[in-house]
Length: 363
Image (cartoon, rainbow, N blue to C red; front, side, top):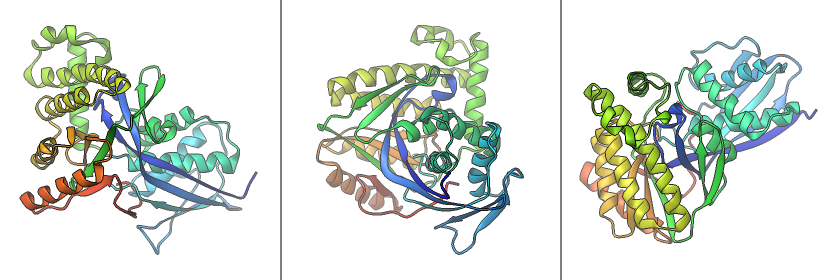
């Protein structure tokens, strides 16, 4: 087995399909240019030493097999070694240097990029017989079983299987995928609002809990098991639970429609679906913020933008916009400047990337 290994993995932006993955629904993410890179060096003992460009000059350490949560960003590294050990692998000690251009708290899966890059590195270092789907499943377990973030599998699947220039249409129940090319007539734009969000606890967990309460009242285990024909029944639920269920059921339908529109290169229809998705997240799932709503509104008013929506878990993070091909840099700069003028806040254009952003580890 080799003594060293290097690997990387991308962040992702979800084009449409929010909060559907933990209900076995449909999602449509695509990767972004920002990536996380790891460089590993095997050790002769069981000590794991991790260094991040954002945490220099200190190294964080623990013994493989003695992982314990509660150490901030190191929990993602600890979680990976703990979950790999569950597969019967004797994880040796190693040193790992981590650098990333995936911004933290922006809703573009900085944690999944770290998990998948480290799992890819360990796959090489230890000659593990794990395919890309297996890595995604392990990465999700890092979040749910070790970090304590009650997420679905979309982020890890996108980071592990996504490719530049295409959307990954994923059925999170079966893990079946279809690679849908993004035509040159459409350009994806991503702008980080500057308002950080987190999946571990808080309002994200509350929304998830409420959605499962709604599913129980509808007599199903997952809201994937009802469709828009059930909307009259959904309307009879307690108001908060009705809103949560309505978002997930209609969002699943919007993903299916978005895939058809993307195959046809119908940017106008995609834009309308983006607008409906954002309204649903704002009003039914209540995961938006006034600043995000304003950023979406500014984007929608730009002549080269077909549609805009909050992307990711919500309560901050990034906005994804659907632009006319070749106009992304100019339109994103104009939206950035108008948002700053009206709020005094600084947002960051992530796609198309204006330059190199060195961030590093997920919160």
